[in-house]
Length: 263
View (cartoon, rainbow, N blue to C red):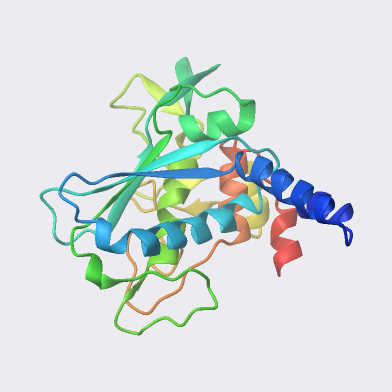
């Protein structure tokens, strides 16, 4: 909102002020999201515009809550060997935070680290990746949440909001099977019944820890949640305060104020 006001404040009836506003807009957008496509078989090509529009709409929903910005690059590709999965995603790299948790080194996903520090841990390469199932006709690629959603299609915006959530930090390792822990799963406790116990998340969840999917602890246990492992056709799932709070616990520079402003 502040950047939007910055663009508009000096716009007058003069052509020069409009040109200046456009240049400022481009400068601000340069700190946002850049998409690239790894599509040697041209599977994505017929859907590229729709994919771009839906990913940008999904990114904007998260970005509304960022308190810092950085130029983030995401590569889109096609899954191989799977016809059932809709999509998968994650940051390309992780970066040590310099902290230790119970004697184990703590890492943060690269996109969150770049947003928090302004340092790009993998240089010129894509910061994150989204892989789509090859059956793209299953998706409704909408440019806006206001566009109609067919009841027999998967909402691409909801899917991309979910996948970008993984890129931003919904990413759990198993500290017992590896020599590291990341800023997200350092707050996951339990063995059978997994709980996320970050302080911001507990506050946003009415004072209770957040139940995680024991089969896939990067996901929430509530099957109707945005960050659940599954979604059905015709469903729209959006960001809630608990998601922002969980990423805040994981070190992403976000604020819950954006939720209140958009409500």
